[in-house]
Length: 360
Image 1 (spheres, rainbow, N blue to C red):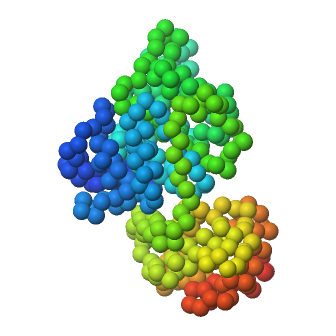
Image 2: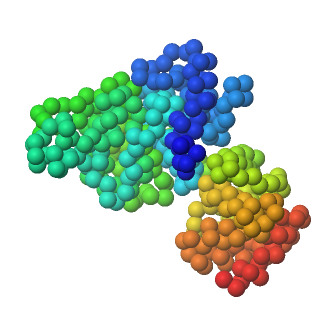
Image 3: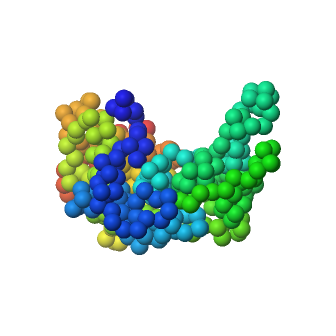
């Protein structure tokens, strides 16, 4: 049955790793936690001796602060540019701490206070009146009842009035249900991990009262070439394994693709010698993974399995032009002024696509 699921939750995908960590874990665990903070850190950052794959490649100190926050009475807010693994880290933290990453509220302009607290089964409500049977708890209320972690994705996409429904939950660790004349109190182990994109600042700015109830941990864009190459390769290989596919990914191809993303993102070549035009779209690590994986699919289904520069370029065009088609001018200029001067097979393959780009 699991093989039929497109994407299983983290606690299912990583079940073997979590079991190994539970067997190894001899450290104190906060009430309600499945693993100790040290074991949660190993799950997120990886451990070669225990054969734990890293889920996040980056600053250890930030991850430790995030884990320590979840053991406190303050909620955790992961902030950063789109594609910096905020949701990915949130999911895996929840899986490690609670054994359940599915208690999630997806923030949108249409999210209501009911989705944060509770709603009703209106057929039962009309037939029986307010009752435990007719009450429909939100993921956050369920997490409070069970002492688990709840996730709130894209919190700044919600209007301020909906965001502020969290204030009493985070302050008092309780939800009042006046229709049933009772208050639900959170069990130990309950906390909230929220995520917010820095590009959403000003969309629905969080109130000062709500901000005070979160510890902010910023997940930065990877600037180290080798680190970002490792992330892109690992995630692409995991996605290929999920699809039961194999594709040849040369080091040259991965390095070239990540270099293109970093230089277009930063607006200059990595050696700092030349300025380049920056597209308006987000050149994130997650987007680089998507481009490489798409190139793998093209090579597998329409080629001989070896991914080349032309495969990834066909996906890169869509990634760059998703916001503004005029952004293709930045890519064309990059090929003419940067890629053309560089040696290597993949750089040559990228440059050869310039004529095709001009016809779009």
